[in-house]
Image (cartoon, rainbow, N blue to C red; front, top):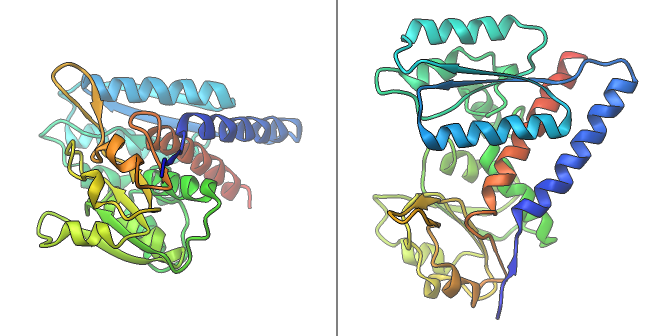
Amino acid sequence: MAAKILNGNAISKDLRQEIRQLVESRTSEGLRIPGLAVLLVGNDPASEIYVKHKRRDCEEVGFHSNVQHLSANITQEELEKRVADLNRDTHIDGILVQLPLPAHIDPARVIDRIDPAKDVDGHHPYNIGRLALRRPALRSCTPKGVMLLLEHTGVPIRGLDATVIGASNHVGRPMGLELLLAGCTVTTAHKFSRDTRGAVASADIVVSAVGKPGLIPGQWIKPGAIVIDVGITRDAAGKLHGDVVFDEAAERASWITPVPGGVGPMTRVAMLQNTVTAAERVEH
């Protein structure tokens, strides 16, 4: 069996075009252009690349963007004040604080200060809680992007067994909630799990979000499973790797995401969708 590739670059391109058309429609109706603010603290090279991509995405779909590159020495209070100012800014529908933050900044406190109605990353406790209660509002971007990929396969996933590897607040936990909402039977494997291999081997859907290259050998994958690799790690030579041994897994899976070019672009397009949703909710 040779897996079909879930090409996040191609799928997200089509979705961005849909968003562009929606923005043009809003403009023709005299509605405000959606606005996204991004706060980048310090000079982390990976974060700078991510923010560059997000700015380019905004330009492509016609959003108003406000990117603030702040000093790594900014205080907790100063950063929280920036968030508060953006909460009050009527031209801004979405606020995104690029992680990671410098060690002296408490990211949880910063996220808690974001107006939940502008939390387009979907990380605020309010929005995670809404998802847990099966009343989703703004949804965590990476899990939402994964659900868009699963939808693209055309496979009915209600009732399927899904294993999520990793239990982070930003990916693993909301990913499990998304799959539960879709009617899957969900297992979460993490660093204390005793039989991760067994959890993977029985799964119709595998989502790995750990960031450890080669964590999931191909022989663990159930024949015909859908494999979504969220992990991405750069080695000393600069090459990017996922959690899953791709070539091996592709011989057994029915669908699989590449790294890079799989989940990453879908995370960004999910954030754009959230920004549109936030803008529309202001008007209703």
